[in-house]
Image: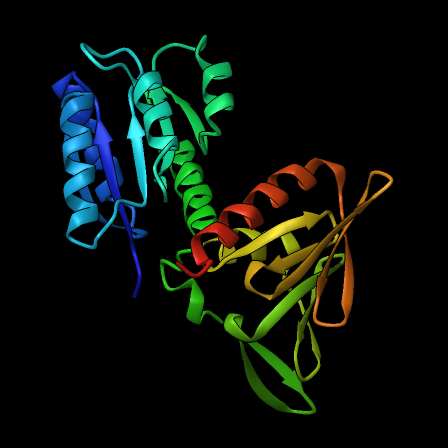
Length: 249
């Protein structure tokens, strides 16, 4: 089962140990490397690439001796396949820098476990890494007295119906009593993203993104699904990053 390989960087040992502990406690994280400064982080990242086991994400303090986190983040963004960056800092004033670098998230110390979990979810979706067993999650569906199990891997998109959700697969659809918000959280690490208040889509099945006169849609198979304004930029950036990672050398 795929898991994330991450690097935690902080020049304060207690903060680094606390962050490393929280990262290792998350089942979506497979390996946690640590570095006490930016130069050591770069050496570790280069070695991981040379060994064919690149780091998926860097959880990075900002105010450090020597190479600070903002400068390091900008250097990482120049990599051919840059790791995702999550800033972990005690200071709010660097949020604009994080936005410019296109960091996945910006966490304030002391880090709350639920916020770290959300940052890991964002990294997993952005990195297109199925983790935490979500790729094999199954939903029981009752059909005329027979229970079938629909795998999340077979679902193309999900449509909200009040407290219910309709799972659309290549062979049909199934109505289940699970709210869309629950499936959004449950299947996020398997590559499903919310594109609209009524739709959840498997990124791997998106074949086209279309923007016309401010209206955005995605096509999955023969179906066109609306994308709300609040999700348009994030989805477009995600698809661009995914296309770059999967393009032939």
